[in-house]
Length: 123
Image (cartoon, rainbow, N blue to C red; front, side, top):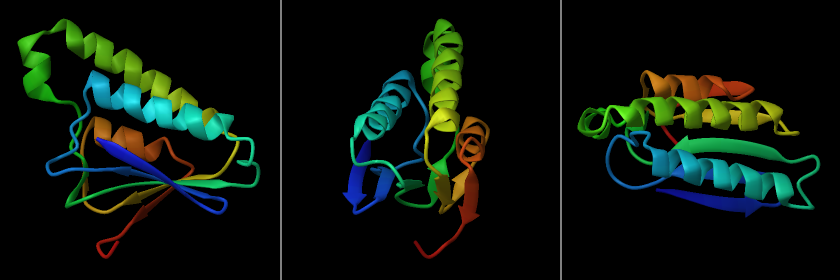
């Protein structure tokens, strides 16, 4: 799913686990929850958020298999992604997507909703 670590004034949000980090309603809600946790942290002034992922995929977009099983989930995932993007854009600190692998479709949109995007292989 994800992990959230705080190192001084640096928040590190990492998509964890094996796989392609496909976005589904549960993962989108979890990331929003982490963003809200960061926002409510009283010591977050002058902080920075870095979002990254384990493995060779930052995010390969929506979970299409899940979406095929219930077409109404596509609409739900779109709404949840838009809300997550709004949360990231309005976060009162610089945000950095440290893209360590593929970022396709909605995964690319997630990365691009940060203030800065860095693409690296060695993180």
